Length: 134
Image 1 (spheres, rainbow, N blue to C red):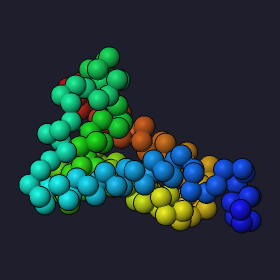
Image 2 (cartoon, one colour):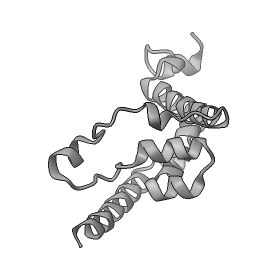
Image 3 (cartoon, rainbow, N blue to C red):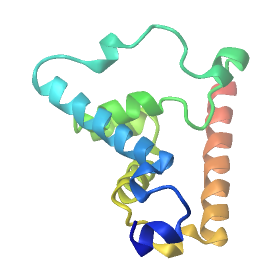
């Protein structure tokens, strides 16, 4: 084990569950694009049940509602469709790509940036809720 891995604890860098999840997310996004080129769709293979427990319980969308459709649209390079499903897909995809590559700038990890991002998500969610209530 080299010094980079040992400074992060006993788990090797490649076994980080969040990094593996980011890589899986990007792989499925890419698979969506490849299947689209072949004339198939991952959306048609998805179950026709609500994927969001919050929306199933309340009837209101959570901040992440539509994210599955947004990432699948992003894989097809359907940027308008991805934005329509959930505009948060673009910063999340960029962050997932950076994290999967192990290249997240330290500045993004500061509490000020994280708190600002969370505040932005809450403002986005409030706007989404107001649009659905009217």
